[in-house]
Image (tube, rainbow, N blue to C red; front, side, top):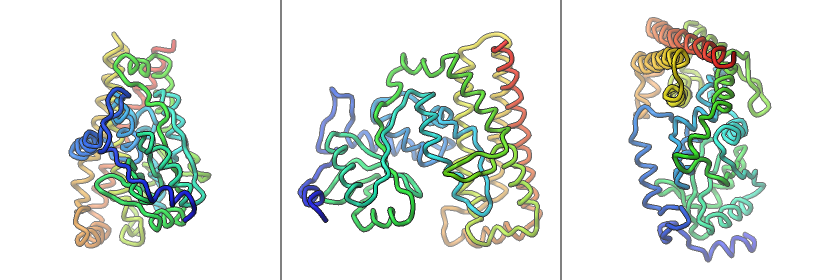
Length: 359
């Protein structure tokens, strides 16, 4: 390694050694509690990238909940599907960050590093200042410490030069620093529920459901209603095997981040519900109930599929059993079809709401 690594090799810096207070930051112990509290909270949005954005936001004493961040990023309004590519559920980071800048007053610095030295340089510069960073590749990981030339992440993970080189060689690796924490108290939080922002978010929720496709990372991916319909058709098609290749992930790992994210839309609409009156309130109540019903049917989907994702020894057999059982597949397709119907009814209520407040 070059001079940077010789500098980094003499550095042992962990947030636990610091006692932040007056500057608004928190200790490593508090950060770990944020992580633990989130991990133990069932039924909340599970998309790892936005979970980590939430953790960074909380690190800076932000008051937004993870569901609100999902809604304001508009991830909760997307349903993405491409059977041959289970990774499309990850969406486009730039798209989500742009929405958070516009809707949640957040700001970020992002870097696409060319080599390991650049990764370490960015990490050392920020961690030395007491600011955690986010590594984004096929998954995201918060880094809040340095030991020599090894990055220290959540749950004791250690990312040394070899692992970083592997991440760089496997494809896109981005580094993120949260520049402005966004709403940091209840007063500033109210700004994101102003009329202008709320109407913009609701219009985009409707638009994402009705569009044919969305461009993500220079590729076109079917989304919204069309994505639901394509997934339902594949579930009902006996020629489609879910046990071949990576497509099995659509039965769980590629779905969970998306359907749990819908909770963000419900949380956001509930916040708006408390701020409107009369007919507007009644319309939003109907929308919330429809989206809650959609969430309920997604939970029923999990029961129908019944794959033990936490048991690596059973996953393959469970997937084969489901794929070969057309009765269960049709039952699963029926669940998703009901999700689509309830979601579409919720979208219709949002259209009524927009028409009401805009006229």
